Image (cartoon, rainbow, N blue to C red; front, side, top):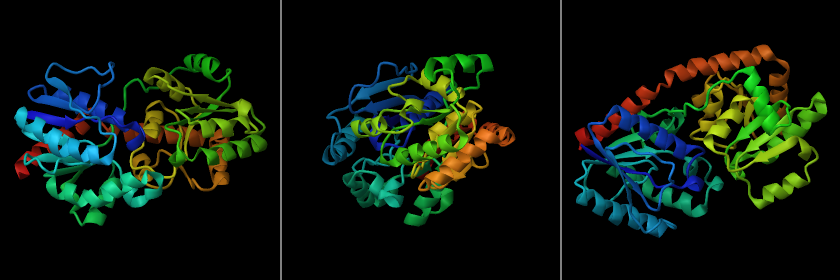
Amino acid sequence: MIIAVNTRLRKNEQPEGYEDFIFQLLHQVTSQYPQHRFLYIFDKPYPTNLVFANHVTPLIAGPETSNRLRLQYWFNYKIAGLIRKHKVDVFVSMEGICSLRSKIPQLLMISDCRFLQYPNLIKKSQAGFFKKFTPAFLTRSTSIAAVSDFSKSVIADQYKINTSAITVIKPIIDELFKPVHEAEKELIKETYSEGKAYFLFSGNINLQSNLVNLLKAFSFFKKRQKSNMMLLIAGNADDSFKKELKTYKFRHDVILLENLLTPDLAKITAAAYALVYPVLYADFALPPLQAMQCGVPVIATQSGALPSICGEAALYIDSADFKDIAENMMLIFKDEQKAGKLIQAGHAMLEQNQRKKSADLFMQSILKAITIE
C-alpha cells in the first residue's frame, strides 16, 4: 500500500508542539509497518535533521503555501497531481485540510479547533478559511481522527458527526524527555538558572501563551514567598515581549531561553520544580506531557483540552486570574506531598499512552479510510 502524508511545516499555524507530534507518530508508524510505502509531501525544503526510513520517500511540491489561495492550489492541484502520479492508495492530511479534487480515500486529522472555540487567538484569514471549508473537508474525508477527546467532542457536536466515526490519536512523547538524577538536576540548574530552583514555561510566546499573567503571578509568588525561585521561559519571543520583560520588576529572576534544541529542552524540563502552562486555550498540549514524562509536576489552564489530556496529573488554574496561578504555584512550592501525587498520576496516565498503541490506532484509521471508500 502506498500512503501519502501531508507534512507541510507551519509552526505558527499549528498547536503547540504539533510538528513534534507528527514526526514522532510517523516515525513509530513507519517502524511498525515497514511493508507499506510512505510519501511525505512538503511544500518547501525540510530540516536536515529529519531522518527517514528506507520505505519513506520525501517529496517537495511547490509553490510554498504562503497564503490561503496558494494553500488551496497546493492541496487541490499539486497534491492531487502527485497522488495520481505515484498511484497512491490513501492520502493522510495532518492539518485538517482535504484535497477536494482528488477522488482517492483520505484520512483527515483534526489538530486545531481554535477557529470554533477562540477565533480571536488566530489570524482572521485562518479562522475564516477553516470555518468556510471544514464542512467540505469532513464530507470529503473517508476517515477522521483527532488529537484529543476534547477536539473529538467539539467536532462531533459542531458538525453533527457520530463520535464513533472519530478516532483519537494520543501524542507520542520524545524519549529524550525522561527523569534525571538529583546530581544531574543540579548541573542543569548551574548551567541555566544560576544554580537556583525554577518554574518553567515551555512553548511558543504569543497571545495564546498568556505570559503577561504568568509574570504577574510570578511577582505575586515572589512577594509572598521571599524565595530565590526563578522562572525560565523556553520559547521564541517577539520584540514586544522582550521589551516588556526589560521593565519587569523581577526581570533578574526570569531567564528567556530561545532556539533550544530538543535535547536541551528535555534537560531543562526534567530539572524544573514545576511546569506552569497558563495558555488561554489548547486542543493539544505537548509541554505538559513532556513534563509528566520527566517526572515534573504540572500546573495547567482548566480550559480547552487540557483537563481531558492531563486528567488528575495537573493542578488546574483560571488562566485569566493571575492570583489563582500564583496560589497554585505556592501550593506546589509548599506541599511536596501534593507534588508527589501529581507526578505519580502523570506516570500512571502516560502508561496508557503507549507508542505502539497510538501507531496502531493511526494505521487503523488509514485502513478505515480505504475500507469505507
